[in-house]
Image 1: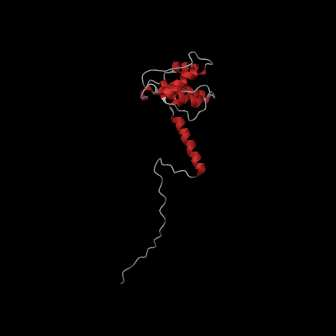
Image 2: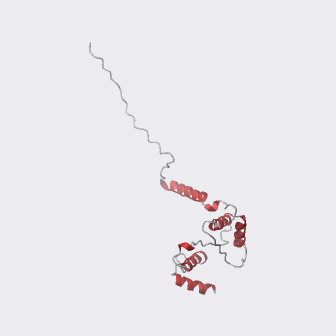
Image 3: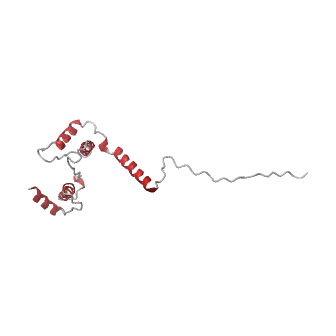
Length: 159
């Protein structure tokens, strides 16, 4: 008796596409996908912004800053916040500015945030202040002066 032989038909199918890893996103392609990705990024930045969260236990400070920023002619005309690092100064001001922006009062004021510890020397503050004011108030996009020049320009402008 001859040995039995079995013939098997094998069908080769292409392997299914690998499922994306958990949490992975497909790369956008085309202008619409790029615009959608940019919008998603902007939404994420807004949600993650510390300004979106009301600083806890800071109602009095929020009111003081809001009243100062919305006063028609505040006296004195500048607001300086000082205190130990990490106590919420920047969070309070950013929160009030975001509220004013959401209410349509975005042109009420401009703010310059500077960490004094990051300055190599105190005179650098004049350069930062001059650059900020020239860009926000005078529309000079490429405004930059050395610290000593900026101090002289500010002195001349505001005296």
